[in-house]
Image 1 (tube, protein in one colour):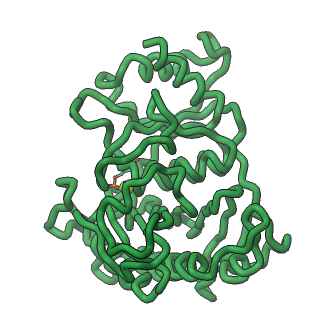
Image 2: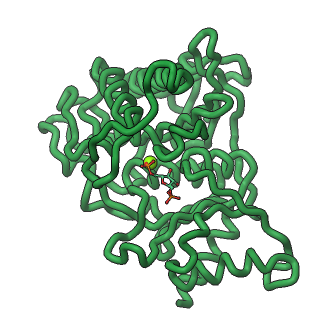
Length: 336
Ligand code: AHM
Ligand code: MG
């Protein structure tokens, strides 16, 4: 993506002046992206208030995935729906928190998918959480919205990003021509460009995985991590560092910022499920960002972006980040 090379551009100015592979961003897409960013700006404010406005704790309900919903999961979901429903270009939306898609302007051009509040287990302990979003082009805008309209591979995404609510509120975005980052100016409520051409270094010494599941992993993942743990005295000839935030947004933000890999692979705790994370509104948008930053993303056998979903809430095994490490993991899977 190219825009006037000024790091004081706000998000609206950025969208108006950018070219994606030489082409201006369609007005309808600009409108939708701005609505998402504005809602995340509001949500950032709510997140920061926490207990002061009674936002912490469980909502006492469950979502379609059988997971306990936190109050903030529901608030974030409602805010996003309300924030984008005025967008004429939006045909419909789907969320981690709702079983079925919601029609917005049925025959619009775009479909929005989101995880309104990723990292729910971190809400009450004041650790970074976020919002993940993916935008698809509706294949036939003339037909009424159906769930099957959403079931497209990640390669069909026209935009994807996340907003991480941490010490700073930062948004990463790709429109298919590189990755850019914006930080929220909490005084003006504007996202301001802070980084263009985000690149993930091809090699790394840092990995992220929930080690408590080690005994349940498949052999290729165990082999990979054991080699990392063996450090300079083992196969890898270098010492590795490990991080696990338990918010995919925050872990992927670290990977985009300083390299590394993030894994939430299939494991034997629930062998019939392909993984914990959801393909359409977690793995696909993150894979689009990572690929656009020069990294790679796989389920072990296939690039995640190539998977064709059969279910809106489909789960997937995820390994993403620095290219050399992902290639190594793919190689171990092919040998197993
Ligand atoms: P969520 O969308 O319900 O918050 O679940 C997804 C999160 C990811 O952000 C994170 O990587 C993972 O779940 C952490 O899981 P675990 O607690 O098993 O380590
Ligand atoms: Mg999530």
